Amino acid sequence: MKVRGVLFDLDGTIVEAPYDWPRIKADLGVDNSSILSHLGGLAEPERSRKWVVLENFEREATRRAVLKRGMRSFLGLLADRNIRTALVTNNSRTNAEDLLRRFRLSFDSILTRDSGLWKPSGEPLLAAMKALALDRLECCAVGDSLLDVRAAEEAGIPRIYILSREPVKFAPFPAVEVFPNVAGLRRKILPLLQSSLLKSVPPI
Image (cartoon, rainbow, N blue to C red; front, side):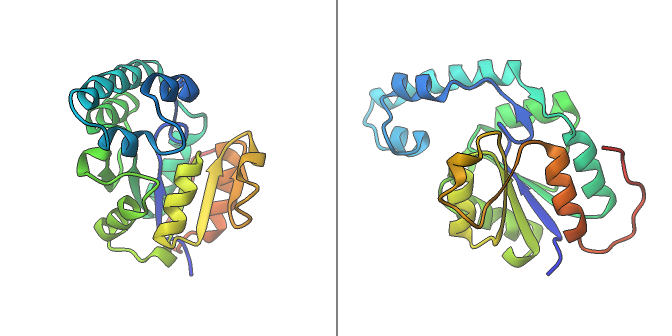
């Protein structure tokens, strides 16, 4: 089945953002669970205090983020092919909208942690596909982390693509394809796209 929808992560996928995750997890006291699940399980006032710590890290990383090379062209290609796109991020709506305004990007659907759903659960991806009115077999998921892989697997999405220069991290997931840059991802996805009226193909 051809691809009619692409579900994107944000930080590390659409943009390069300087998150020092080991330091952030250490400051928040997170071990093997996800940060959001860990914070959600804390009692007050510790929960609120640590949310402020996380939000401060996120705000600074958002301020310093840059658009990933080749991403604007790739998103333009998908729009020209009438491929539906969703942004599914564990970041806040405020930070996501800030980045989209700054880089002048748009998606057919945007789902952030403010919805009450976040990865590694597959629920946010299922919600995004419902918003796009697409089946999991018509979609592919694009991310950069193990959280993205686990969420896509739980949602039953068969095509999972990762942007990373550390492919060894994803070796336990043989069905996952890893690309070092957007150009490689584009070459993979282009032949899979649902045939549609093509307005223009932006250069790589």
